[in-house]
Amino acid sequence: MAGVEMRFELRGIEGTLSHGPSGAVLRTVPPRDNGGDGSSFSPTDLLGASLASCALTTMALLAAKEGLTFGDASATVVKDMVGPPRRVGELTVELRMPHGVPAAQRPRLEEIGRGCPVARSLHPDVNVPMTFRWPD
Image (cartoon, rainbow, N blue to C red; front, side, top):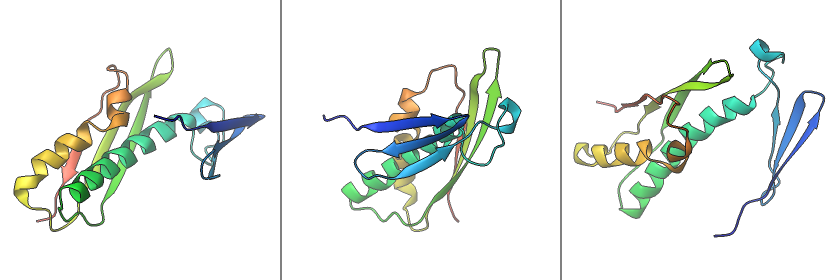
């Protein structure tokens, strides 16, 4: 597999993260509780956002591969810091799932979401409660 190059430039405490293949850019700043102004994602916020997007994207890819309907979905992540040393202690994830997914397919999709590449890359000390909200 080929690697994906990303670049990070820091000016003061504000950073710019660039995605090599697409040229997309994200701005980062430290959170208020760690000396920043909280005006954008912090590096640890990106960890939570990465987890939520990975879980839903992985589920949608599996559904497409298996010919299942997988419509619009969304997620909310709450990041809790612990320390010292300062680190992410918990990422609480709530996934609001799409309509039309057969009940029999849901457990498999949830398993895939819980085991997405980002989730598998997290240190085992990070608690990751993940809740799936399926429409009635």
